Length: 252
Image 1 (cartoon, rainbow, N blue to C red):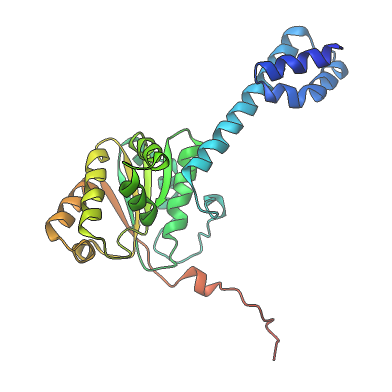
Image 2 (cartoon, rainbow, N blue to C red):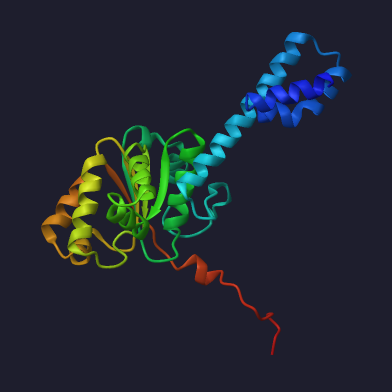
């Protein structure tokens, strides 16, 4: 057994997949540049660190459950939705997250609420925050099942330790009383230590109708609006303006 095989066995034993995968290239570069022992050792360890950091980021992005479109570097600043480039830059700096501020993105369908929320969540994950994206439906399902299903219980524990939670499409549909109470209890438990991004097409005054309880709606909004920036997105639906067609433009 040659030294390469021995090194690969050790890599497998100690679960050093980065070194194992890049070993041939590392040796080739070291031989070509007559790299010293200390520099070579530093390089192979850095390769493993980079590999683990990349795997950790990919894992955290999977757990965040982001929608497919969540890259704010592709954001169309020419879109006339009421959000200026300067304000977008400030949002992406995430200072509000360190200050435990909430963001409410409010506006009609298609104005970019979900895309913005997902993009900010993705950038929070990339910067090391525990950040998660959940639709209102997913969140309510988890709260309903957390005492009975291990996956829901695990997700609940994960969210309770979050720095940021996105709740997408809150109040899109009417909420039953038991679910409304569960939602309030969840937010009431976390609002002092966790930032929320809320996307909604309902004004705060309409939340009471969706919850069927004005007192509960007031208490819920009181928690969310305590330290909060409300961003009203306007304009026509981006999806409708840029919709695709199966027909060519010159089709008769």
